[in-house]
Each structure stands twice: as C-alpha cells, then as structure tokens.
Amino acid sequence: MAVRVPAGWDAGIYEKAIQSVRHGVDPYASGLAEQRAYINRPASRQAEHAPFTYVYSPLTVPVLRCLSWLPDGLLRALFWAALAVGLFLQLWAGWQFADRRERSWLIWLLPAVAFFPGLVTDDVIISGNVSYILYGLVLAAAVAGWKRGRWFWFYAAVLAASFFKVQLLTLLAFPVLVGKRQWLPACGSAAVALSAMATQALLWPELFREYMATIRVMFDLIPDFGYGPAGILGRFLWNHRLPYASETSMMYLAFAGTLGLVLLFFSYQVREDIFSRDLWLPVALVGTFLLNPRIMKYDMAALTIPMLLIAWRGLRAVFQSDGDSAVCSNRTLVLIGAGCFLVPNLMTIFGPVRWPVELLVLLTVFALGARSLWQPEVRPLSLATPAELIVAPAELIELAIPEEMV
Image (cartoon, one colour):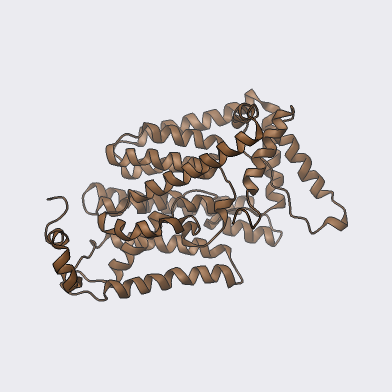
C-alpha cells in the first residue's frame, strides 16, 4: 500500500516542519503562508485540497530542532522504525487484555488489526501519524499500571504525549477507573500538563499566537472534527456553513459528563467485586478513549484489539445462556460476529454517509461491553466436541475449576 498509493501524508507534515526549523523559519509561519496561499488561490486551482500544516504545540519545536540536526535519510529511517515499534507496542498491550482461550484465535488476527482501526477498514496505517508512537508508549506503560499498580511511567507518557496532542490528557481517566487511589496523581499530572501548555504562551508568545492562528484557519478550511458525537455535529454544522464552536462544546460537555458518570458507576461496581475486573479493563479503555473530544482513526487504531475482545465477549453474553445449554454454538456465534463486522465495513465503502459509522461501531461495542459486565463469561461444557474431550483434558479441567483456584 505504501508503494502503490499515496502514503505518509502526516509524516510529510513533520518533515516540512523540520525543514522549516533547519532553515531558521518557525513551522507555524510556514503553515500560515501555505494556508493563505490556498485561500487566495486563483480560480484555476479551486479543486486543490486544503493544505495540512503543523499544528502541534510550541513545546514540540525544541524536539524538531534536535531532529533537524540529523541527515534526512537517517531521520526517515528512524521515524518509520519508531512507528513500527509503536504499532508493535499497541498490539502487545492489546494482547494483555485477552485470556488464554482468546489468545488461541487472536494471534491469527493480529496481522490484520492494523488495517481495521476501530474494526472499520482504513488506510491510516500508512499516514505516518505520530499517534502510533505516542499510543504505543502510553499503552505499554498502562500495562504495568493495571497489572502491578505502577502508574508513574503511564503519567509520564501521557504528559509527554499531551505536548503533541493536548486532548490525550483525557487518558488520565484510565488509572482512576481501573487503579486504586489514583485521583490525586491523575489530577496532579493534568495540572502539570495544563500549566506547561499555559507557560508556553509566556516563553514563546509569537510562536504561540501563530500556533493558535494555524489551528483556527485549519478548522475553517477542513472539517476535521473527529468521530465523536461533538465531531459529527461539528462536521454537520461546518458543511451547512453554520456556527459550530459553542454547539460542539455543549455537545461534548453533555456527552462526556454522562459517559463519565457511567464509567465511575461501573468502576465502583468493580471495586465492590460485583463486576469482573478482567471484563472491565477493555471496557474502561474504550470508555476513556470516547472522552477524547477529537477521536480520529489513528486514535481508534489503538483500540482495535480491546474492541474485538469486547465484541466477542458481549456477543457471548447476549447469545449464550448461563445454564447447561447454550442458545447458540460457538460456530454460530462466529458467523453472527462476522456479519456484524461486515455490515459497517460495507457501509463505509459503499454507503452514502461515512463518518457516523465509526461512532456507531464505537458506541455499540461499548454497549456490548457494558452488557457483558452484568453476565459472567459463558463456557458451557456441552460445547466440547468428542475430539476435544480426547485431546484437551487440561482444558476440560479448566472448565470445571476457576482459573483463580488453579
């Protein structure tokens, strides 16, 4: 794909920003010049796509300056290697959510995960967006948090990631939802990050003004609001040339406030041992990502494995009973799941409206996850075939004895 179709459109933005810094020009001034040239383009160039420009905070400019010292060839190689490592860390972190039975089939799906971010096909993997690196570090650090209660590196990773994408501070809700006594560290980390963002206006006032101007012009030119409820509303209002700032803000506050209360309720139920913590972890992660005011495809890529596991567990909770017999067999359940997977992907490719499909999938998976919390995972003995009874006696023992007792 990277060879045959246009690729690296986000990586190209970073490369242009580094080139600007190398030549002594700040990247925001270069971006504003491109945006103004697009606005003032002649009628013969009206079909051109609006330019994408560097919109990360001035706190990242020193990073660009350090990178500008490297040769271009080495810089590209290191960047794409870092993206590959980031993708691997995302896959590894998602793998930690699965139990032993789920890993037996999940391993065969890992190569395809990159091409179905959020379970809906997209080519964002070849964009070269820095989010793959950021989420790889954040999720890898989160594993140590939920498994061993060590959240320091998670907070450090989120703090560093927020210098590039301030909206990633919503990830600080995750340790609050799954950890113990994490309110103070999470709020402290948020305060440090927001203070750093505010301080840059004093350290680099001209850069900060250009940075804010670049963002304002970008949203005037491109309705790139994301896949959340506020993003869908913003895109609708933008397409109809209606004001969107206050409307999308109110939509986000209403949605995030409601979702936050739901997540806190579930978290309390888990702490009281009413719900399973293993089932809760991926649901909490998806809910945390839904708090992002501008969730994009590269954000959803980090959720693909948790969403897949939630969907499988949720479908089992819906279509299989608690008794000795199952409503449907695992084979039938796989066919149902395949159909549910196929429908949104066909809608994305052939449907007249694309953007709400991703939000619908996200909300449906979250609802399935919430539903599965109320019913323990079903593993009825009657599903075993004669061959399984012969070749897998250890698995039959696991069916009768809970894993915690083993």
